[in-house]
Length: 120
Image (cartoon, rainbow, N blue to C red; front, side, top):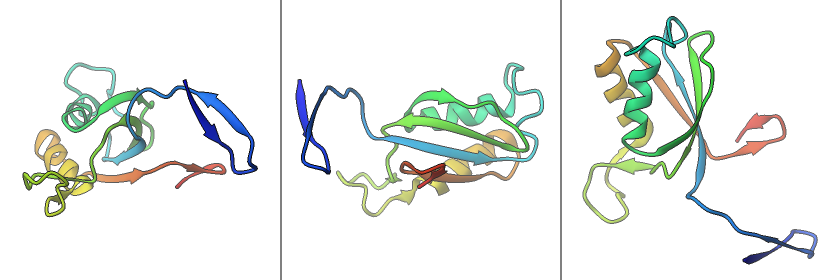
């Protein structure tokens, strides 16, 4: 089991499994409409997102938005280098693929964590 040093100098024991956690917001008009139906826009954008990460939580869509909690989402994709430094930004790639799948116009925002009561 790993031991981690706290900011105040104390230590905590813990074991963490998985990869970097990210919060991903998809804004897409009417994604909340009929979201429980097979082949809904929610299902389509989830399929796109799952190509690049492991989805651990799918929020309930409302007002044209949905938030996912994912593991292992890269920052860029598609250039075939080890660090993908020259690739397409993941938010751009997700929008391109989701728009093709849904026929809509989506906006994706990637949050790296939480700060107080907001995403950071």
